[in-house]
Length: 147
Image 1: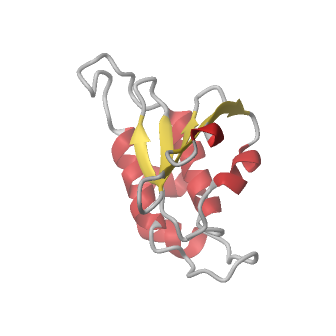
Image 2 (image 1 turned 90 degrees about the vertical axis):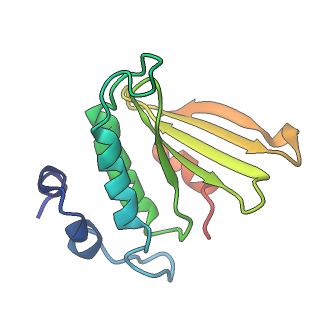
Image 3 (image 1 turned 30 degrees about the vertical axis):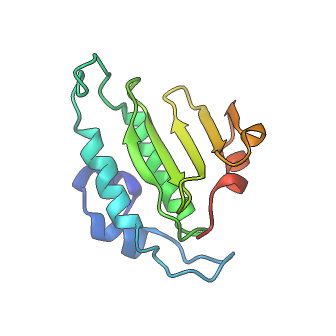
């Protein structure tokens, strides 16, 4: 079954059980326990209509939905740390991780133009804060928490 079929049918059990490959780089539980819930959240956000925030936000765009699903499936192979998925007012989706004590925060916005907007904040050391835009998602992998 292809990813497109899964998305069309919204069969979440298939996403975590048969579409994903076995991880090879780390010994983590597979599929990652958070994957199905994360894909379900993405589909819920896909249903948001324009003005969902009552401040003229755009509806979530299809590119961001499809690319975010691909990304979380890749991430499920390398991390136990579940991202929070949120819509942005510009119609994109963002993945967010916060440390247990909320001292570190990473936000990756999956933009409809194929770029990724990264925001990294360290409340203990603001000199480490970064905000940048990248074209290749692989450059963001090193920032993502592993557990």
